[in-house]
Length: 335
Image (cartoon, rainbow, N blue to C red):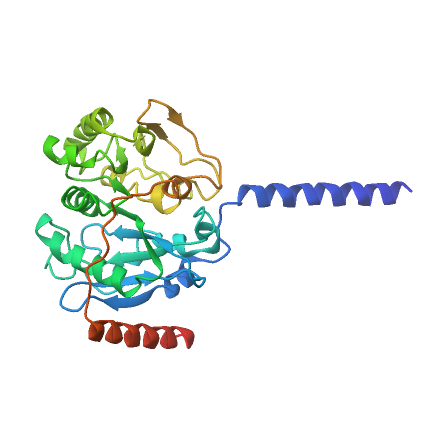
């Protein structure tokens, strides 16, 4: 009898250890980024930019949000490079797709700033980027909800987020600049009264040190002019870490806070992202408990003034359809 009891106790202890282990890794994805990257297909806006994109499992008659990701400097030096660094393909995982409330998924679009020799984003490229987004929306016009178009970007990509959202304020429902090297002028900010903005900055950012204090000033001014204070958020970091918890101790790596967004504000362990404080436009401190992070917030942001994507020719749509079909066939055979 004692042996039986001992065996049962050992089994219970083992089960407890397994349960704790599962809990600790609850945020870990069931599919790795090396596989998720292959779920993104290649596309190109004729005469403008190339991009990679992910299409959700579309149900007939339903429309889905569009999330746009802009890479940082030098991450556009070759096709698909924008997927290599940032774990943006996390957002294609079943776990993350299911977090889009009242949608069941979202389109993901990552354009590449390939026209510039430094592979960077500049304000002068806004028209080209907008044309590329318009093209993608037009090709998927029956599937994309134009009142729920979101844009985020890191470093120079974060700067481009500000340029895009201030130039086309009636197009985006929400914007998330990360470690931006640029802050908008007061005149530009005043265009964003009906746009939800979530800004991310690190106090020790080596590259954006001059703009971090200005980012706080920008947030304070946004709170004054906004019509939707609940749609404003500001996340500040005192330290930068990888989602695994490993400290980024080199001075230049305090700039690397993109993981907070691509990991939906959660560490790989499932805890709230370390060394971060988030406040909203009402002065409330926000805490995160998985699975309700950035995506849950995004899902609440809509833009009733949303523009429709520019019309493209029927011929261009046919070419895009054939190209996308060919890409899917290649992806199916792992080519």
